[in-house]
Image (cartoon, rainbow, N blue to C red; front, side):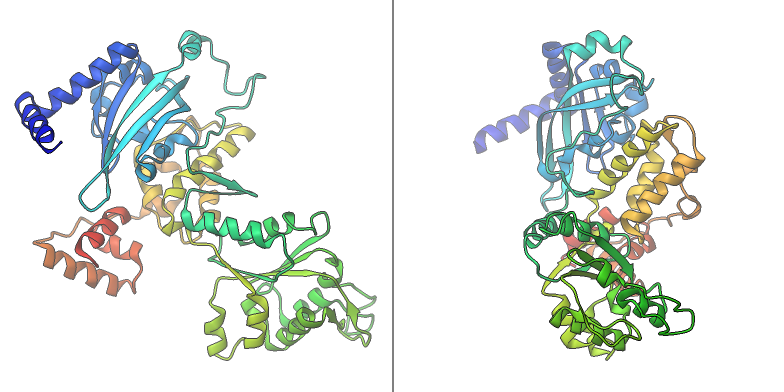
Length: 467
């Protein structure tokens, strides 16, 4: 095999790599039809090869596509995320729906192979799109986007996508969290969900409830940081008439209202110490006393708590009871932020766009490459909720089938990336990366911006240098 590789390399050098690859694309086109698209992308997913079949199929000329991000042409609702090529390495005969530059839908079968460099990083890939016969014959009479024949731009999942009670991911850590949620839902164990704001903690809590024997019973939620201690105590445990000024009648609290069901305590780390003691009693004895009352009330309830803070740190700071922490985190579940599961950004983006397309009146078919790059480079401090808000903003302020840069919120347009810092050698690069991380207190996104890099480029350079 080594001698064969050597001979092949020598032959390719003699013929020319560009000529060789182009000829292979032409052969595939001749075998499969003149609308068979063959194109290649580099590590940044910019197009480096675009054959005449791709032009015939999607309407873009090679001059328009070479050097452009592949998202300019790959415009199906969910598989625009490159069908997981960078994650899975190979895609075989996956049916997808693309859209020509004139907006007409095109049904194709996609096969692709990815390549990696010496460090194992994605280095690009070659993709082949073969139109289905039915679509090729009927392209000019395709139904309008919102005809009675079905919804516009149907969602199609790529290999590795998991949908779970309103949560969508391709990320391994999120899939593990889904598995834990599914298993623990079958028990009555108390669960503590940790994750930043906007990561989907309440959706995870609802998934636990829906998967349990308590399904069909009440699911109630309260944000422990949103109320004053006095109001929160009354909200949770209820009060009797005359307990305080304005208490003109008995009121059942959330614990009693959620009897037989599930109570979700969001931001539980913000509970005052006196209410922590009362919550501990509920978890231990399943009883509590309403504000101003004397008779204990028994409840059969499951508690699912959530926080964006580390409870162990709160315990060390003397702001949270250690015994309550252990009662709450019988089963801990961690939901990672969106910035560390970068592959989910495009997945969720097109998922939200598909949902808004169904509602109308606007129908987004594609995203301007500049806007897509800005979205992919964003750190998403507000996580999935922030991404949803950005989509809602774009649908509200923009019109037309393309989501443009000027339709993103102001912070996307106002932030400008600095010019890349010149690197003399590996030692110099390693020093500058360390300094950037130190200046940004370890925040990878901010460190990358200081050096004028995208997060993926910053990550690859750190990995190459062993940092």
